[in-house]
Image (cartoon, rainbow, N blue to C red; front, side):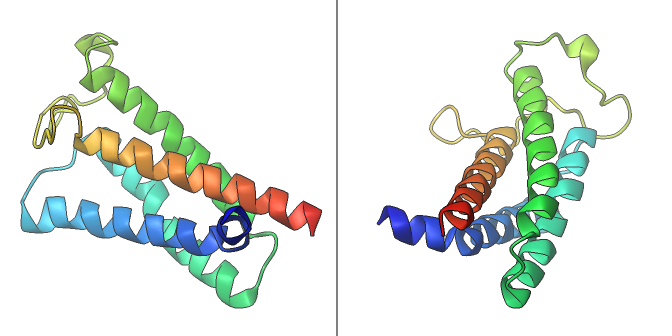
Length: 141
């Protein structure tokens, strides 16, 4: 099982990026939840991952990790910051959302803890882990 995950890590990362992209579009275009500034930054970093991973997989580019990982890690950092704000660990005064939708608006809260910022964080972390593990798999092959 571990070898399967390592060998197909890019495919799983692509699937995660695709699901996250479709999910964010669903929330904004179908449910009409206005994205905040931090949501936009996370989208800017997530959406290209679908394209980069697709091209990397089709071309069998072993360097795709070098293009994907910086975007994913930056997305993770922004998602962590967003979750710290959202969960009131950081004060609202440091929120960058002064115009438009608030970064603290609770659109969903499934099971008492699954929020849109949490979903974003989980997606980026999964992609980080899969891509890093794929890099390790390539070095051992």
